[in-house]
Length: 155
Image (cartoon, rainbow, N blue to C red; front, side, top):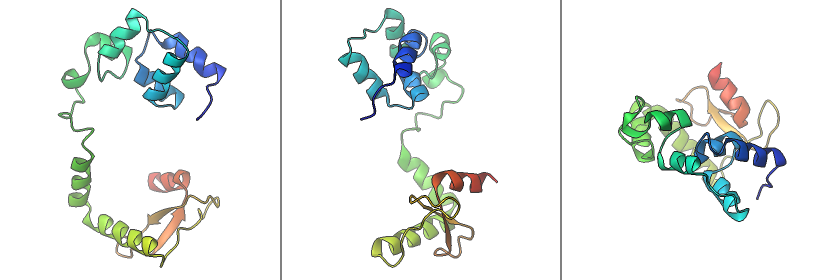
């Protein structure tokens, strides 16, 4: 369990009437549940303003909550599918079958022990992720940490 820093507590107290708990949690790099638990454990009560923000379920910011720009009223609304991961997984399978097949073959090889996860080829981090330059060669991968894997895809 990560300890709360003085900065985090001050930030939370300063903005609790301005933005919803979910936004506070995102800003602090914590879960919504962790923020709520801290408030309960330390007797920090919600003000009426903060309570109204919380009731605006799904609002990303206080301004969105005040303007009613959440849920179906938000122009980015996609029919409530954002929590349906299976829907997005199926779309990935339909759009990129060669990528899915390459990942599955590599996953099988790693699970069977015929192949081992490698270190990041850039920085040596132990949490290597497989990067395919060519999906037609599923076992020909470059091992990169998360940071360098993202950089590779952005370049």
